[in-house]
Amino acid sequence: MLIFPGFLVGVLLGVVVHRGDFCMHSALREIVARRPGASLRAYLVALGVQLAIVNTLGELGWLEIPMPPVAVAAAFIGGLVFGIGMVLAKGCATSIWSRVGTGSGGATVAAVGFAAGATLTARWPLAAVNEWLSPSEGAPDISASLPELFGVSTWIAVAAGVALIIALLTLLRRPSEQTTHWPWAVTGLALGAVGVLAWLTGAFAGWNWGLSITGPARSLVNVVIFARPTALNWGTVMLIGLPVGTFLSARVRGPVSWRLPSRTEGARRLGGGLLMGVGGTFALGCNIGNALTGLSVLAVNSGIATIGIVVGGVLSIAIGALRIRSDQPEASPMASPPAR
Image (cartoon, rainbow, N blue to C red; front, side, top):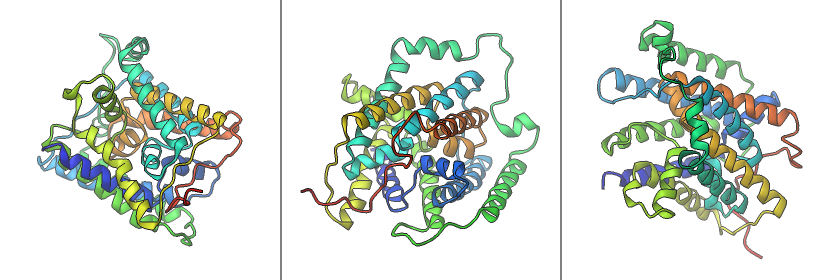
């Protein structure tokens, strides 16, 4: 029963992602196009909310915040591979899993590739590459948290981070609010609140992290494919709840129909998902596990991985995303068209 709240968190996340049309892949495209829009601003708000609340809970001793070990090469290369895959898959880890609930065959193929890539990297030959990229014994230690790295208190680091986010939101050009989706501020606040809830409910179930997709995708494969019920955890049921929440949100607006991608599109998105799973495993997390959850607790490894994700994504977009015919991410409709 301790893991059941994870399912509810996943459902809430699916609703927020769908109603807010949130996707960090879209945010990255907004940066490249120099047209900061709703996804980028919503991300900054969500990051600021978690940065302030989660670290406060940690400093007061009400929440345990573990720091992932720093593996510079694995984090950056993993982030780079993930960023390239994210562009090919036409969505970040959260959005592709959520869009399964809207009947998107392309997103489903990408999600399957993501789970396969993450599992292959952890269990089979690529695991040796992952181990090779990780720091060897005797390598110089790097402080795991940004406050330790710069020799400042957590309070100062949090204050500086929140101030920077407020400054960016003030400087960024306001996007048009003519949309059927939630305003970016509402989406950001809701996403940040779900992220905090993930930390709190996960802690009771032994899941000492917030929102993440890579680990839960591996555990889902272990439960479903390898018949290992012991692999079921808070993250697994959170991931299951994600497309369920999106489906419920979409179904309220109208019928949900299955949409199949072309063979070329399906192959491209499968490849993108595979790269995302591989890169997310190398970097100890996907875009939401690193760029949102990890950065919000000032983890150095997550900072390096986020830089890698941005570099990989920007390079892919700048060179035409390896000849992708459409340079726009898949839309997340409020309701799918009825089947014909």
